[in-house]
Length: 257
Image (tube, rainbow, N blue to C red; front, side, top):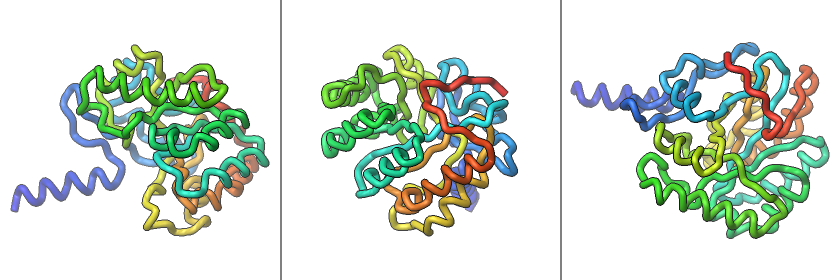
C-alpha cells in the first residue's frame, strides 16, 4: 500500500507540471506552477534553475518588457502547419519551429517555407530521445543530423537553438548541447495541447494561453493541435490588445528575475 501511494503521488506531480525528483545531475523534467494574473511562473523557485543558468539555457526574456516569443514543437505534421504559417504571415509575427528529423525528412517544403517567410528553425533532435539516457556521442549525432538536413534544405545558415525532447534534461545533456554551439530553449507558458485525441476547441486554447501571459514569456505550442491552429490569430490579437509585442527568439534579451 505504501509503495502504491508513493507511486501515485509521483504520477500526480508529473501530471500537474512539477519536475520529477532528481539526483544532483537529474534527470529533470521541466515543469512549474503556471503564471496567473500577469505574475511570473514559479521557474525561479524550482530546484533545476541553477542547472539552466549554469548552461546558459533560456526559458523567458526580459521580464520588464511586454515582449512575447512564440515557439512551436513540430515532431510530425498533422496538417495544421500551413494554416499556422498563413496566420503568422498575415499577422506579421515571427516564430521558431523546433523540428525532429522525421519532420525534416517528411515535409521539406514546409521547412523551406518556414525559413523563406522569416522564421527560425531550431533543433528538436533527430529521433526525439530522452537525451539524459544516451551517450555524448549519440547526443551530438542527434543534433548534427537535424542541423545538416535543415541547412542542406533551406537558406538558413546557422542553427543556434535546441529544445530538449519532452523537456527532459540534466547538466550533462545541456553542457554537451552548449559545447555543440546551441542555446537550450525551454518555456514559461504551455498547456496540455499535444494530445490529438483530447482537443477541446479554439476557445479553450485561447483561454489557456491568455490566462498565462506575462512579460518576457516564451510560449510553447505544438503544431499538431487543431485547437492551437484555430486559436492562433485570436491569441496574437488578444496579446497585442494588452500591449504585448511578438519578437524573434534571436532578439531575446534575458533578464534574471
